[in-house]
Length: 127
Image (cartoon, rainbow, N blue to C red; front, side):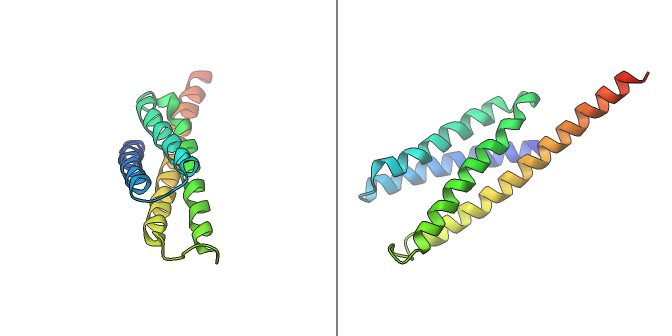
């Protein structure tokens, strides 16, 4: 589960970075709205690199939660009457769904790792 979540985060970060750059270049998007996506990309790439160490895996759900929160806010901003509701709504919905899958798999990986370490600790306490 950890390996799947890491590779999903890596692919997600690359696609998000390339997609956000494309949107920024082709539209008149206000730059601070793009900046948080670049922060998410940088954090996800950093966490994927750090997740090689099993103890750093706890940061992976944090990265996924940030990305899911970001796309959740984007989705409901687009659904408001003030915005054009057809503006990339399908892409944002898919990105949010993949983000939820990444969040779920990273939480499962953390729970599996926690069980592994607590089982080792319990075995060492009672020889």
